Length: 106
Length: 162
Image (cartoon, rainbow over all chains, first blue to last red; front, side, top):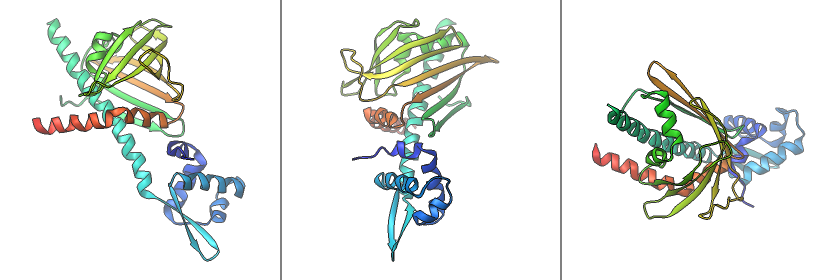
């Protein structure tokens, strides 16, 4: 199943997890210590983030460490930037239309 | 057109809401007209080289704008806007959704709620737009509908002029 990356970042707990592991790779237990939710709930969030390729797992001995895929996060920002540019473009056109109408009225 | 008019664009990912604020160097009634009259809307709504083609627009509460974004190759992407509230020259709201050419609403992609506010100060008009999506993935769909390419072309055109 392909996960929706934007749903992944829409959840406040998942955003907090992202902020947490952006600093350093962590095991699910360490991550869970930062939240009031159960270890199971944190695991579920980590699974969704992994499926979206927002986080990656690394095995070190018996422990699994989760860290952030910075590039994937940048993709979201770039994508939002595109949306911003559509509006910029649209409004620049409107500026011209408004100027034209104003001139016609004179 | 280069100017110092305010433009800000912010996205609140936790509520799937997009905020777009923009100032225009024109009086309130004219800006209101530009947003609510199909002939004027079609001149600016689609980022070039795309075209906006409004087949029908009934700007009353309960009325609808049925329009297409037309790609340079002539490909049409239809949408509807159903007007849910109108307070002349200060605010109007609509529900926006993708549709097919026969005006059947695309149920695969949830629509978005738009809230547009207009205010005037010292000869400029500020428009504040709030767009609430069911999920931000809808926005991804909008980009995929070709604006990405369209926009790159616009930038290229600009480079040629400069």
